[in-house]
Amino acid sequence: KQEVTQIPAALSVPEGENLVLNCSFTDSAIYNLQWFRQDPGKGLTSLLLIQSSQREQTSGRLNASLDKSSGRSTLYIAASQPGDSATYLCAVRMAGGFKTIFGAGTRLFVKA
Amino acid sequence: DTEVTQTPKHLVMGMTNKKSLKCEQHMGHRAMYWYKQKAKKPPELMFVYSYEKLSINESVPSRFSPECPNSSLLNLHLHALQPEDSALYLCASSHPRAGRDTEAFFGQGTRLTVV
Image (tube, rainbow over all chains, first blue to last red; front, side):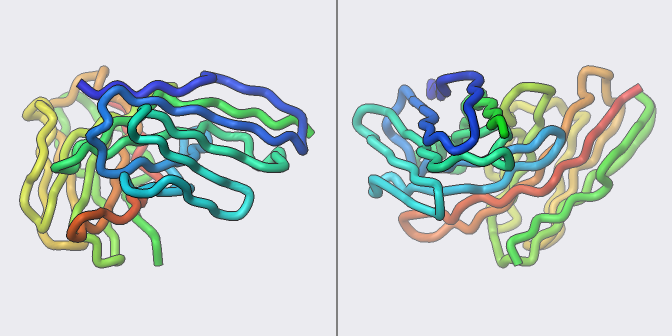
């Protein structure tokens, strides 16, 4: 059974810091991995999608990497801003279907 | 347009009521999903429709009944719910393609309270 773990569960950093969020999964038979952010009480906003054959994706200040064989993904946020404060979720789509498992998320707080 | 629209945004219903949640997308996506999210927990997959056919039912109680009338619309019919069904219900869509799938886009959710 696929398990998705995100570390740390919560993170507080001063504005301007670069930071790394971690996501690990136990079953490497994945289709893709997607990073989302969620503001309190709101829906999910897609940040980056990495297909299983890819190693990295970048969008603006965000960079996500995927090492399928070791079951790890990281989300790198450069020059963090208070507006980045949110919960960040990684979601793993299993191969062969639509089943998607989410990690519990990392709650990020960027202090001005 | 990368928008998934859910209505209503908030819903309060009694345990004997029947109500429906609606979800709409116009991105041409052919896979649509319902998720349930409790406070401070990750979303949990409930149902998936692919090309208007039910593809996944994650052993959801029959008091939740999904419907996909066409490729743009997804409904979730609610009947005889329990207070523990109170949660944020999220709809998502994506487009399956040979060998890969597009990113999933989520709506803003319906905050459901069962009293």
